Length: 409
Image (cartoon, rainbow, N blue to C red; front, side):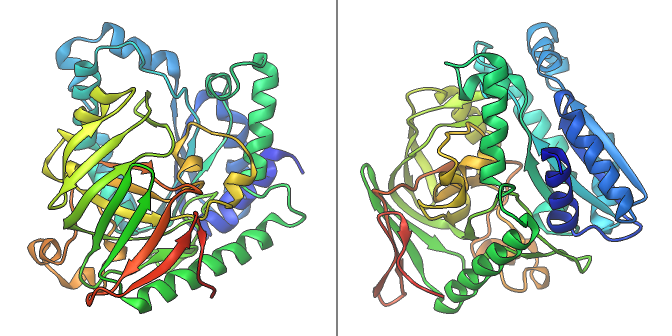
């Protein structure tokens, strides 16, 4: 079985757990057509009724930022996103994203132009983002190599060698090198779900991260729920939202984050590479931000709305995760966030709040849930970072020691 066939089968059968009669909204890069075709074959074999593909292209993206008018940069097809969002909300359409793009796609373009376009897209895309964040339907994300991404990850190799190496690394990170990848992921998802249940039962008041340049206390929302491994979509399907996934995650309290934190890995933000990020929080708000590279892109993100300056997710990932086993800095958030514990600016996931549907928006906010047009992950874990669970009475429990789990399930 080829790389594409194995990944397509894993994405459709385990990631989406596609139900007969569903259609699939699929986004991909034009170079990822071999995988898209394999996914389509698997969708129809599983009883799906349609694959609705939308393709992106590096050169088309650059042309927009190079030539489009100011008004064009601030345009986004809201009509399209509303229609897609309605189908996702119904649960009749599944969502599958294939990621893989140039990490420095927009390097060199004026940050203010990039920021305006980012914000316009975020506002228009909200009808699609909300059903995903609410788990209204089954969705998953997988990665597949493209040449520009491979060149960025392996600049010392020829283009063909880089593409081959990146494909090999993706297969390791997604456990496609296992004898039975579907069984391997079923076992891994079971373990992550067990860790999430244990953490929920502890009902910690906060988490504390300690490491070089980091002393951060992340208060947790009232009634927070940890998730990881399997996800339960509202249309009744059990899914694996990200492939690979190595995280357990929950909801920070939007007003109870204090201290300093230093990112431990570079990450990409809409085609801009961000390196050396350092943030200071007061009362849940990022009040001081520094970066060695990509600072203007971060500032543009945080200016999107009031919630963009606050946290919507905190996730724990062991430093010996399967993605780390690949031994590659992927420069892609899907992979790199599963190599290290991380935070996310912006929108929180309602699945991380107990009985979220029973509360009005203001009541969810009072319990700590953050809302925003954006959701941006960034990594803060490493083998030099410890994580403590803090009870309301101040008692502390070591959850991670030097980046590795300190409790068994």
